[in-house]
Length: 143
Image (cartoon, rainbow, N blue to C red):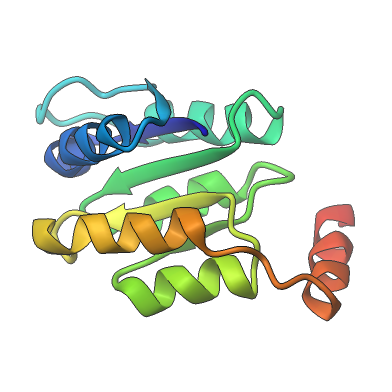
């Protein structure tokens, strides 16, 4: 799977861990920055990830910050992006199952490093159940 990833300074360390996990699993990952834990303005790194997913250049995107909230807000401003903030396996499962989330947001200050792999695994492998949820997503995307 082609995956775009980006973070601000507060999500930089989790981003490095996630890139290693995804590479080990055989995914093609492109890092949109930032490249250190020096303070930056997060929209500069999050919006390009969201745009790349919306344009179909990547199948999924992952954005990271301190809480993940701002990153999810920025990503969701891009039409066609369904970004969800996940903090555990169950939130990741429902993000895919019910919402067909194509971008995942994680907060490094709120999600322990040990939880990253199980969250990613569930988010990448859970299919969208479709049906009534698909109609609702299409209505939202049309707005």
